[in-house]
Length: 383
Image (cartoon, rainbow, N blue to C red; front, side, top):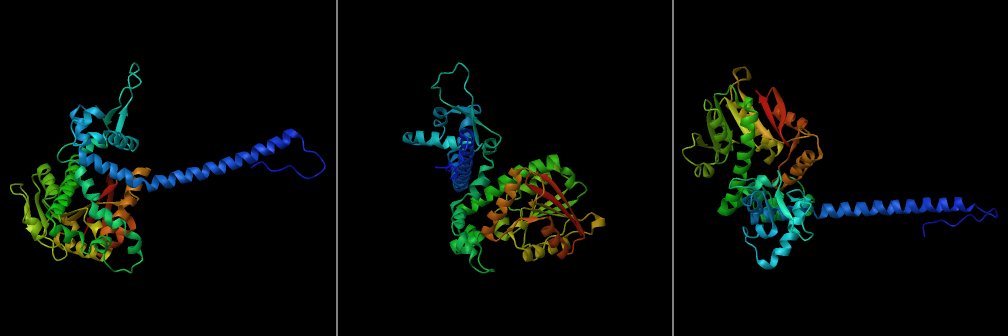
């Protein structure tokens, strides 16, 4: 019982005072219980965050966003199941999955019309998030890569990995016995998932970059996209700025599978050895894959490849700068989550001071951070 017994003094306490003391004590007990229950709910919420990720993966695997889009952007469960591969016995399970996906904001539930019957089925609608999952080149390819079982399995062993001394194998190699890139070389299907994911991200982010912030590429006569994969980013730059001669440098086996007729030159090479000369070097989401020593090697080779700053030479980096950009919780959380995530290949997301240290060590004279790409930034680095 929360209410304390009355004092043992022979002087009686007025009933209204005793009742007030009892109420205050009960309120404190209830407040403490509420705090504990709130903390438990938050603990469960963090524990079940993986369910949100798996629900999203399932929605992408089934093509639910495309199914809703086919019906004009809003559809009932019965309409959705006509467009996805689902055993009829699992329709109630899909309803429960949609409840998770609407609670997390991937989809929305339209409010029923005032005259609608009480048993009217819910109508699920696309949101800005799920609209990114529509079509052949959608962002789902990147999410499928990030949520691939080979990668997720690595995080189940992060605790034991943290107990081992550095340097040592990354979490992925600790789990699978080989690096991500070694596995991709041996597994064509996995390699395709990686490449499709990177290409979908490049399509998305480069369209915004060249359309909204094209000044980054103005005044450049030539550009080499280092580790540019199949050339998606370089092609976007070449299309938007025909006067810029664009090339892509990547490893020989990547270049061997590069598409033809793109207007972009492909060069086989290793960024740790040499970077082809150009007026500007572009690094899109490359540096976060590597530790500081490797990054300095890459940066030094980039510096050798470009002319002096007074001749227009510069390095353009598209990457995360932790703490830069929109200050809302959503963007900040993505930055720190990405930093923890990229540990699976011994990568790191850096704040401004960490970036500055790399630039100075590589011999660059200055830099400018432009937090204009959501949770990522453009960094111009000058020799």
